[in-house]
Length: 399
Ligand code: PLP
Image 1 (cartoon, rainbow, N blue to C red):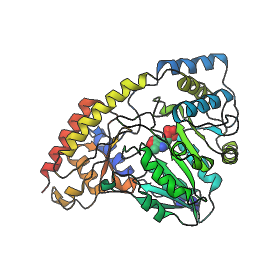
Image 2 (tube, protein in one colour):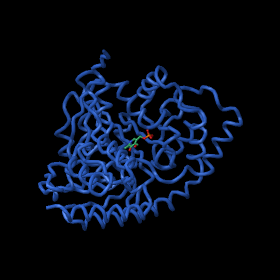
Image 3 (cartoon, rainbow, N blue to C red):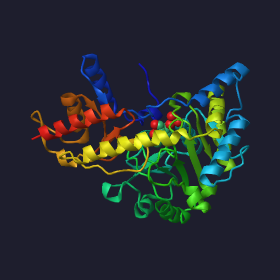
Image 4 (spheres, helix red, strand yellow):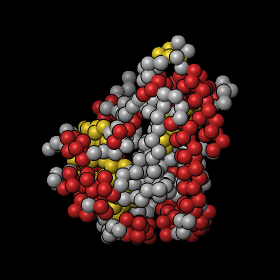
């Protein structure tokens, strides 16, 4: 019989899996399923980026590279941090490139955590953070945020979550799943708390930096420069350049941390795909004028879906400033009945909605805060509007 590792046994089964599996079954049975669960832009990688990849193949850039990235890409990343974020890093010692942003977070946890070490994670959180911490032997400490706080971590809640065992706090703005963008002031307030706790390091997941609407993007090492010497500023190509399949993440931080992460890379993935690295050089150095048009499309969808959901009986939905997600509360439908069955949680809500109207959303339980659910609007407007009509019909049918 197969014995699993303690590390894997700490990983909880995905709460989204049930909905995804059910959606698949319904689709196979011929139902017209509307999936609002996508975690990737519905746009294509820009042509100039594809061309750079093809050029790289033709030039024979097809062998192993330096484990933590080619110098050309590290330079493009350092230039990006200077240009967009006012942060200066030495490309040769303070920048790393990984096989997706996800693996950078994982490698960081593996490189730094010992049993009993704590990592503060604001909820709702991106599903992978707590499990990555668990696999690396650490303990996730969840700091809850509420719709009343606009799903922004308050300095009080951060302070309360920190103990002598805290090694990291993970920040993520714009947020997956809420879409909320932390203002410079909100980050400065957290920075002030962290300045008083010099043993705590900060991992800021800035993956959705370029998908913002009316707000300005800020990152904590820029807002509170005193924290730069213990901050890993993480980002990647996936969301900004519609490059989810190319698997390029990157980050910058203190040289000893970057070196330690490199050690994990050297004994696990080795270098990220050489061709994807050259493509990302073109993405970072190239014209990103295409972003404005894409963000205009995202914004129009956000506005329409937020309005439709907020006006739906039993739901309430904030209007966030970034990413491509909405996170409506479904507190108003808890206790009601769908086809005679009581809705006791957002898991019940998502399952009943899928069954009744074939709309797939991700229950908030997966993100550690609810009752709520995540809607992705990385889908065409027509699908979104039809899905909103179905969600409304479903909520109105509850008794
Ligand atoms: N961080 C957040 C908040 C995300 O939503 C994602 C992707 O869904 C990632 C990191 C990882 O991105 P990737 O591994 O594709 O670079």
